[in-house]
Length: 177
Image 1 (cartoon, rainbow, N blue to C red):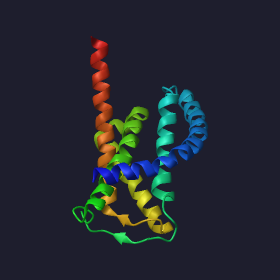
Image 2 (cartoon, rainbow, N blue to C red):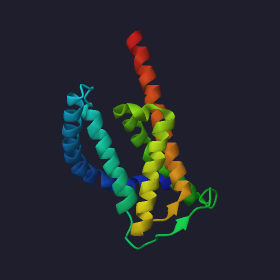
Image 3 (cartoon, rainbow, N blue to C red):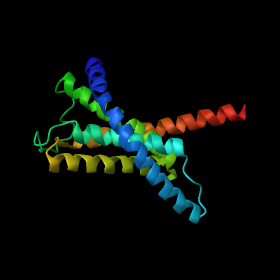
């Protein structure tokens, strides 16, 4: 299974330059708009390095989930819970990859947006994001709408948020010493 995951991650690395190419200008425009609005409301502005990383991660995630497949290759529904698990090693790798795909999204969402730091709210955001991606895959026929994907992506989001809290805790402890 680890071999499949490494092979797939290596193949998906080709989307990083496109994610940078799209994510950086999108992040710049969004950051200007968001921080302008926050200043008017006298709220704390977003950190530009973390927001840029978040935008790049989102762009890469969308490129991988929506554009890595040919249009018309699928467009089916799989509403059976845990149907992809234990079929074979390849499918188990797909489940693990779905979890891994959303960990940076969860971590960077929590780093940028206070609402995402709440485990329940942040996980709900991940589940909604995943649902929208799965729906888009179904409509554009670029993948299979799978409940398992939504759950594994939600788990990845949750793990990313937990990692954020662990890092926040560890950094706080170092500052106290």
